[in-house]
Image (cartoon, rainbow, N blue to C red; front, side, top):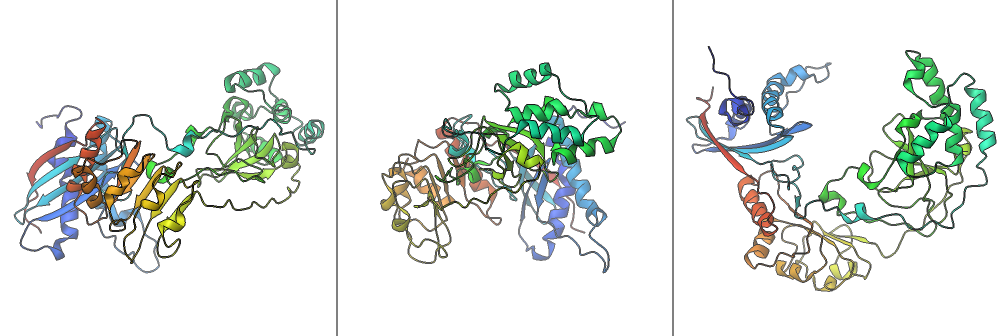
Length: 466
């Protein structure tokens, strides 16, 4: 009888990883020399990154999962083991001798490290527990002078909805009050009218899809129930540190909607059927109206689009006047590269928040033009673009720093890593050995006494290459 392994042990069992490693070895067999072969990858519950070729389907047939069944089975074997220990994402690297003898290193995870994107390298290092990128900390500006649009007409809205939904079950005043207590705000009158006509609970429709569709058509969206209303605060919008730190919140003086990530005044009441949320806006921009209808795109993390000046306008499908926004100058986010701004000096100004130095074929840049800028909080620089990496230490307000391994090495050796950082990232490419990158990441994490990326070493033999 086979011995049962205790729960959680299979992730550290070399046999769990053998199918994945064999596939990776076979994929590199044509390029293998006489020495050891190095392979690496990442497997997560939501996806995986393995350097495996995918065969082209026969002419006239679309690609099917059966075409990569071996890969799917190998990945699922690892995922099952990950589930046993509650791990969402794990990277690995392995050295495989021509004889099949293999040393496998599992990298992490660490609660202080975000998963990498498409590579086995670590993602952003969160140096201060619970810290948020600046745009996610930004609250909307005051809106004391904002008023409802003249088109807001609760009586007309109610008549229209009752004509469209004569048999709907409306929410009681107690149910509306309960929603207000849960949200911590008073619902605007138009939204109350909507739910007095229909509380939009699925239990009221049972299996009657036509009744549900009738409500959705009347409200012109997939209407949430009165119990499911929620505030689209910043915490409801997903982010990765290395992306979010590159953003800036901007609300032009003629904007109808504030350019924040989220707001305690954005009451989400439905979806558009494509994954985007519709909300009533109680914190409008300088040229907006209280109670206007906005759309929060699932493809964006900052700001929202104006759909209608009022819920009445939205339900009656009235056209909303187009509003054009002036571009804010100077730019709060500057991209210095061969196709954009051509120098750090050109990018420098007192309001600069984010400096990104990208692909550049000329002489490396000095950071002296941006030293002392009061709002500069993010620097990202490609390898070889900084004339002196130690100038980074003079940027006293940095919250996020992204550099290549060599520039990080220079800062670490000089004990010059800015201690103002909340998070950091190491730029690494697919062909970079993950182990040196992990070593640098652990040195950075140690400066803040954060959890390390633990290496688990497993040894085994894959047998001869078929």
